Structure formats: structure tokens, C-alpha cells
Image (cartoon, rainbow, N blue to C red):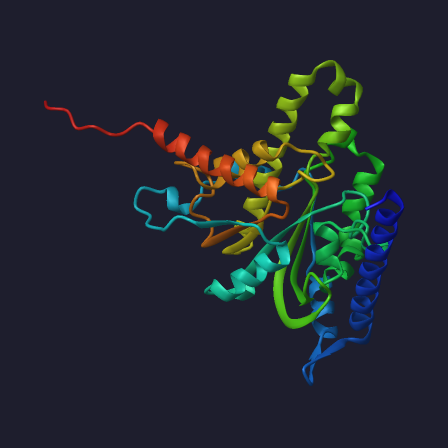
Length: 319
């Protein structure tokens, strides 16, 4: 394919995605949509979701995650560990997968890999990324326009912290997904959406400090990402969400290392004594892109095996 043909195709795809977003927003404005002869009401659900949208500032109590162990860590507690699936599917497909296999599909939580500065990222311009897909397929976008959620964008537009952004988060409950990845109308599905930006590692590396102290800055990126990811899991835990869709957080345009992100998720969710090992029933890592999927899957599982092998075994000694 020639360069000109590629540009034309990209423009056509953007136009198609813009039209999907426009018809989604039109349905939200109308307050309903029709599917297979049935009319599904949206207005009250949208208003409820907007009213209950929450903002968590960088200094919120989510910072106490490490000093608030899950009850299952108590010696007398009994619980099963989280079932984890790493699948080469989209976030929307991951949510549908959990709805089919979950004991309580109304409490599905989805992590939105957010633009820190613009609600819905490039959804209005037809951009193709995880946040845009959620925004043009559901009632999610209106929650980002509320005065509560706007605190998040005001904060990051004032100070982007050289690409690190902050640990601020938005929580949008009971968002209704009613379209699929291709723009088809589908049966409504309620999800809770947690909005958080990953560190923009690409920007960090281009900063003066990133160019002068390469390894030190990479170590800092990893520390900040671990803290942010832990707070994400802690917020889902606090909200009582038992089934979660995560992914290769920030490894697209933000350029985080896939293997580092996979290792961090494993350390928080899967290794022996992981803080969130017993917090959820099911976690789906929805990952698109063959190389990203293979690298993530391989690293996540290798980290689990490595940590398990290094765990000391108890031995009974003769007196």
C-alpha cells in the first residue's frame, strides 16, 4: 500500500469512528436507542451515573493501600485467590466475557487508560485507542464532562508533571455499554469505569532529567506506575467490584515497557503475598496487538513462577 493510500484509509477509518461517536451521543441525548424491535431507555441511567461520579485527588486515602491489608490476609480468614485470564481481546470484549462468566455482572469494573488532559481523549476526532473505544460505545463520556470529573482535567492541564501526571482518578459508576467495537448496537451492559492516566514514559524520557539520568528515571517510572496501579486496584476493592478488566496499561502511545507493566500487575495480584491476591473473583487482562499480548503473557506468567519458586517452604525440624 502506498503512503497516499494509507493516509486515505486512515482518514476513512477516522471518519467512520466519528460517525459512530456521533450516533452514540445522539442516542444519549435522545435518551434511548432501539435494538431488534426493543427500545432501551438511557436518560435516567445517564443522570444517575453523572450524579454518582466521584473524583479522587492525588492525596486521597487511596494512598493508604499498603497499610490496609485485605481481610483475607488474616490468619483465620478463608478465601480463594483471584482467577486471572490474559486474553487477546478488546476491553469491551473483556467486559462482555466477564458478564457471561461472572456471578454478579452488574459489578464489572473497567480501567480506562485515560488521557490526562482531554475527556475521552480523541473520541471527537475519531482516534482509535482504548479510551476512545469505551467513550464512543457507552454512556461514559457524559460522566467526564461533569463538574466533578473536570477537577481531574483542570489539575493535569495546569501541571502535567513532565509526563508523570498524578494519582488523581475519576470513578464513573453504572456506565451503560450499548455498542460493540465495530459500532454495532448490542444489549446494554452496566460497568463501572475507573479513569486514570499511566505515566507518559515517552515524554519523561525526552525531558532533561530523562536524558541525563536514564536508568534513574526508568526506576522512577516503575515506582510511580506501581503506586498508581495499586491505587487503581484499591479503589476497585473499596467499591466492592469483584470482576475487573485491566490491560497493558500505558504501553501504547505512552511508551511504557510492556514487560515492566506485566511484572507490576503480577506483583500486585498474583505472586505469593500479593496485596490484591484475594481482592477479586476474576481479572481479565484484555490486550490487543500480538506482540504486546505475547510479551505481556510471557512476562506475567514468568513473574508468577519466579516468585513462587523463590518463596521459602516451611520445614518441620526434629526437636
